[in-house]
Amino acid sequence: MKILFVSPDPKPQRWITLLQAALPDAQWIVWHADLPPQQADYALVWQPPAELFEREPGLKALFNLGAGVDALLRLPALPRTLPIYRLEDAGMSAQMAEYLLHQIAEITRSMPVYRQQQQQQIWKMQPPCRRHEWPIGFLGLGHISQKAARLLQLLEYPVSCWSRSPKQLDGIHSYSDDNELPAFLKNTRILINTLPLTPETAGCLNQSLFTQLPPNSVLINVGRGQHLQEQDLLSALDSGTLQQAVLDVFATEPLPAEHPFWKHPKITLTPHMSAPTLREETVRQITDKLKALAQGLTITGEVDRQRGY
Ligand code: NAP
Image 1: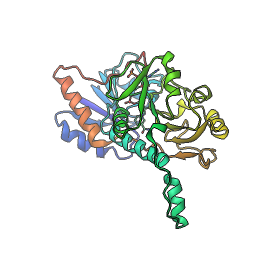
Image 2: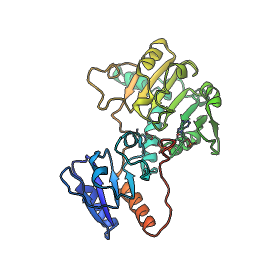
Image 3: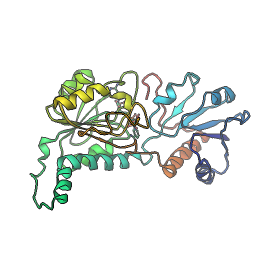
Image 4: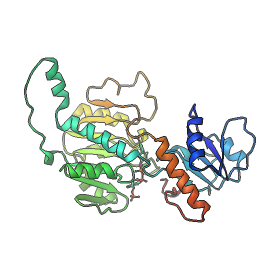
């Protein structure tokens, strides 16, 4: 079995060492621009160049080195019927749960006020968090967000989700379909976007959505930057429709130096670090799937090209 590793990672050998150890019978090859055609069976990819598909027409499947496949599906050279497998959790959901809990506790437990008080040597307890005042709603409840939703529900926050299909998770109120979106938004004060970026979801974080949330709501975007209408967010923060926003993903990354988000007093931003791909977990998941394929078994995680995720 010949497998290409195709990624802009400047140190691909870190991956190859792990891949070879996990699947020693395979021939692992690092892709580079001058590599002649290899007649490879599979490719592990992140941001692959168009030439890959011209030079390797015999690929049986791609394994994406991330959960989101929006950039991959936008490639004009991507063969239409080539199966694509995305990462399913692979250590990302625990990181995401931790990130979200941290950001939410910052807000609901008045942590910025305590930091200010420390500077002034003020010993004063702020009003305790009344969880019922902070209902949390997840837009999308897939591999990345289910652990976070369960964790927050365990901590007795009211938690609900909105997804394409209804979910059955103990203690989590599930909404689905467009007709249930208004009721979901009305009952959400901390809105967490974990949707994949697809033609249907692009631009969904907009003024019309923000105005359906209760006053003083909070937006946390860990999906993709292109979900957010940036001007609508700035207006919603100025008008008080939204109290605060936490942004981990941006339409342009790195965020340009002159961008108004950097210094906005109501925006907390992080550089797309909420749930990065982890090498060991990723290698284990993909090599397990390759072994299963070699035994003629079916594997999970295939991207549905129609739905776009
Ligand atoms: P997933 O398992 O495919 O889950 C996607 C969820 O979104 C599902 O609940 C799905 O509904 C729902 N959904 C998709 N399109 C919808 C629509 N049009 N209307 C309503 N619901 C819709 O994906 P995942 O692994 O959780 O990852 C989600 C996204 O998170 C990725 O695509 C990526 O963009 C982002 N992400 C960000 C980071 C980061 O570091 N910031 C890390 C990893 C992933 P159904 O369940 O009904 O299909």
